[in-house]
Amino acid sequence: MIAALDFGFFNWSVIQSFIVKGFLFSVQLTLVAMIGGIILGTLLALMRLSGKAWLVTPAAAYVNTMRSIPLVMVILWFFLLIPGGFYSAVGGSYGLNYRAEISAIVTFTLFEAAYYSEIMRAGIQSVPKGQVYAGYAVGMTYKQCMQLVVLPQAFRNMLPVLLTQTIILFQDTSLVYAIGAYDLLKGFDLTAKNMNRPVESYLLAAAVYFVICFSLSMLVRRLQKRIQIIR
Image (cartoon, rainbow, N blue to C red; front, side, top):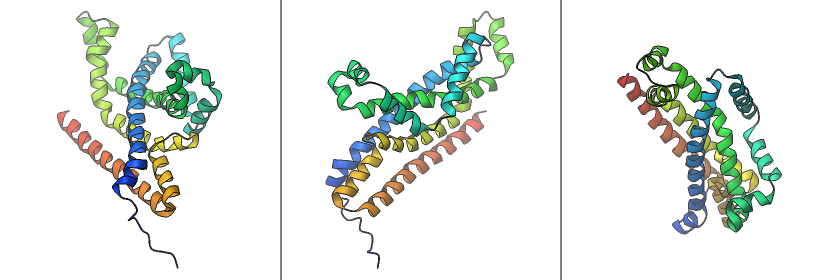
């Protein structure tokens, strides 16, 4: 007979010792990768829309390459191939002690930039060209037109999609478990090993991921409705 599931071992001391630490890193990784990915992705999108071959070609090659490789392979490649001197140069002894976490942050930022780039490119193309021509007509340069006219509207148009991609990014943070980084899943794994409750631990981990991601999805849906009303 299968023993009844027991979640009673999840007291505050257990949560504080193992799970909160991993949750904080997962959130940190998501936020840093989102901000860095959007910035780099916007630059890649502008390069692809510039019409200049020397900008379009490398940007397209980067985006297509990253989007064609599984994320877990990129995580493993970066972690295994980058020498330890890189981490010591970046953060000294801290960089060496937290090599997996730094590797995860850099990898996720570079990887997600390819996906944010396509979202931003679609958002920029969604802005009517007449507004761009109007900007040129009043004496704006290409840079001013992008900063003041196109990008603000593109961000508003693509905000629900950007946030949806960020939810997927949060789910993907569990992949850093492959290199030993201390994320939310790692916290539940350590709880399972220390408390000898693997079934309960992984079931609760799935429930936590579901609640977080489902709640964020509902917020994105409400935001999308509000943006549609504004339009």
